[in-house]
Image (tube, rainbow, N blue to C red):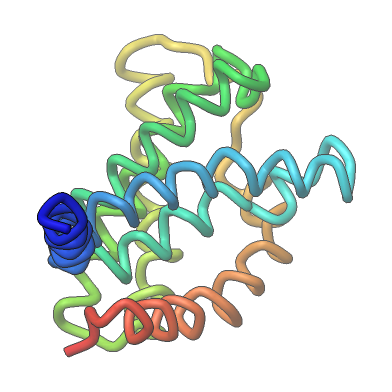
Length: 188
């Protein structure tokens, strides 16, 4: 009987510790990192090899993490998604991996900062615009300042190809993020 009571107490402590904000951030970050690896695979299986550049599935996980958990979490999601996706699937290609990592971290930081001052829709629109401007600057410095190859990366072409993904982001990310945030008790 005493052992059963102790077991119940331990279970209750574990449940209570998982309800803390810190635990929610840790578990959420891990889950979004997994989503950041899984979504591109799903899109590639359903829509072919160009699905990543068209629908921007890895961006979705990073943007949602930024809106729900903030910049640190979203930056971890960006880094782990890109690295683990490469290790598990070979995508993005090794040559493009650093550029993709920088791009996603830019979005993670921008959205988390802007979301503190503006609503999620305004923040997301500004992030999409400013993020691409900053990313263009990164590419300019990489090519002209450091002499690195861009491997065919073009900000203008990525915007054109990624318009369906941008529409999906604008239509879904703020709504789903708000729903999740409320569901896990992080809404203010």
